[in-house]
Length: 190
Image 1 (tube, rainbow, N blue to C red):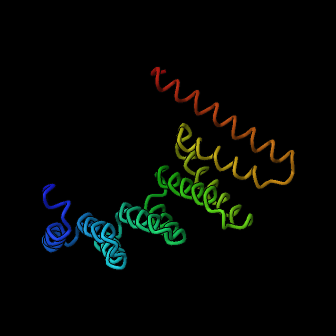
Image 2 (image 1 turned 120 degrees about the vertical axis):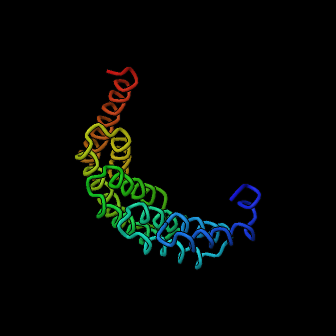
Image 3 (image 1 turned 60 degrees about the vertical axis):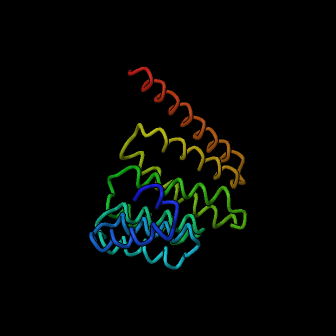
C-alpha cells in the first residue's frame, strides 16, 4: 500500500478491496475505499463504502464521525448532523462529540447565507446546547469556550433587542477572557 499505489486509483482500489476481503469487520478499510471513490468523484460508491463501515462496526463512534465528515464534504448538513448525533449517542460523556456538533453548527450558521434568520437561530441554539454540554463535562475546554463565544456572537447579530445583544456580546467576551486565562495557566504549567 505504498505511495506508488496510493496515488494511482487503478492500483489502490484492488488493494483496498483485498483488505476489506481479508478483514470485513474493519471499518477503516471501507473508509479508505470510500475516500478513494470520493476523490475520484464516484459519490454513490463512496457513500456506500462509508455506510458499510458503519455496518461493519456500528458500536464504534468513529464510524459515524467518518460518515459525517463525508456528508460535510458533500454539503449535506442534515445527514452530517444525523451522524454527529449518532456519534454522541454512543459516547455521551465525550466532550469532543458535543463540541463537534457545535463547530458544525457554527460553520453552517455563519456561512450559509441562504438560511432564514429563524433557521439560523435554530442551528445556533442547537450548537449552544451542544457546547454547553461539552463544557459541563469538561469545564476547562478552551476550544469549546471559543466556539460558544462565536455562537453567542452569531446570536447577537440576529438579536433585535439592544440590551440582549449587549449581554450576549459581554458573555462572549467574558468567555474569551476566561479561555485566554486558562491557556496562559496551561502554558506556564500552573
